[in-house]
Image 1 (cartoon, rainbow, N blue to C red):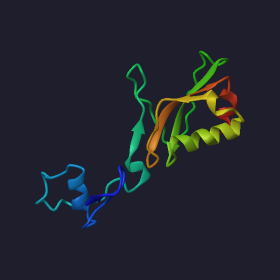
Image 2 (image 1 turned 90 degrees about the horizontal axis):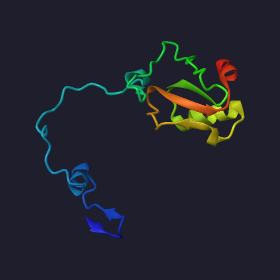
Image 3 (image 1 turned 180 degrees about the vertical axis):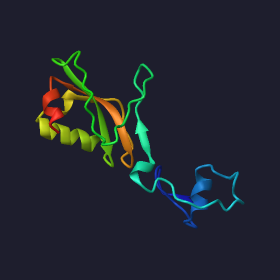
Image 4 (image 1 turned 180 degrees about the horizontal axis):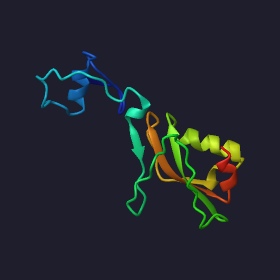
Length: 137
């Protein structure tokens, strides 16, 4: 292995073990175990991501993946709802919502990103009252 700059490296053997050693992985606890086989996260519904709100409540995902629980408390200031996504990242979902509602990106708030290769639910808030327009989606 020779350094060709601060962030560039070349490996002489170009195999996984050499890379693992380079990043500090020198021993594996299960190196002599062949494993049991199987597949991990093969289908989208094998991986479910649910957001937990500040009160410790876990958001739910309905069977039809529709989210109709809008907050009515601050509806004139913000529309809040649970956004359920199937095989879609947060940015793609936000882009679609913005396009349909014709609103600027800055009006939409969310806490973090969720895995695209999953069925996920997360809390979204939009500046303004968009309850009726979102119900039609």
